Image 1 (tube, rainbow, N blue to C red):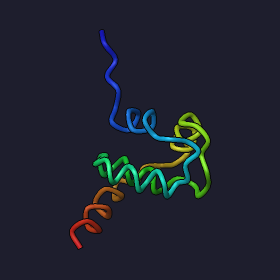
Image 2: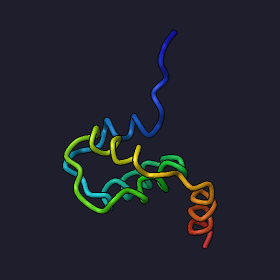
Image 3: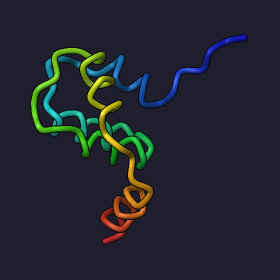
Image 4: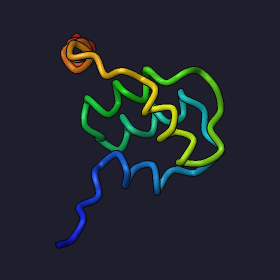
Length: 78
């Protein structure tokens, strides 16, 4: 069975490093990444990430709030 790669994983693989949290959020928004994934990137600790494995590690430590997507949608509408 083939393993599907998520949009976030594809994005992280294509991203140029080092990248700051703001770089990740900006490029994810520009690339049309799912709002939930953009919100997760926005919740990362501020700093510079030198590789996608560092971003994945940091994402694993960030709890995903159910309201994060809703707040993101409100910002886009406003």
